[in-house]
Length: 185
Image (tube, rainbow, N blue to C red):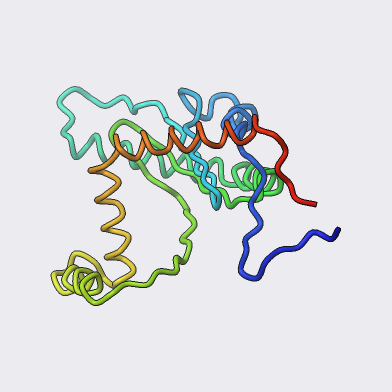
């Protein structure tokens, strides 16, 4: 029987359970002060590497520290650009996802590039009014930015619940893998 894809159905990318290990092996020694943080979803792989804190003179201010951290991140970004691109190309081929890089130094966290995925949604007037209020108040530039702001806010305030939900979904996925083959012929 022919394999069919229903109209509007999306082909899922391959599993990326080993992506963090692959990235750790691909990143050159000395780039980061600890193994990179790798976050994977079905569209993107985001890699954050921790850089060593800059050594500052005694009496340096918080502003000095922030500037030194930003400088260290900017220099790392420039120094590693070509190699990061090659690693990203290999990752994109292997896992069929876009790749974004970032760095952390002290209290400064910078994401160099990131995928911005369009999301289709139907909002009724009350939800649109919430977004419009955020735009009118200057919290967001557009309804799209306002919606992203709302999602971030929920994520920050519901981390425990979202972590429990992700763990439960992982358990369900594992049970499905262990179950009988349910493909239809």
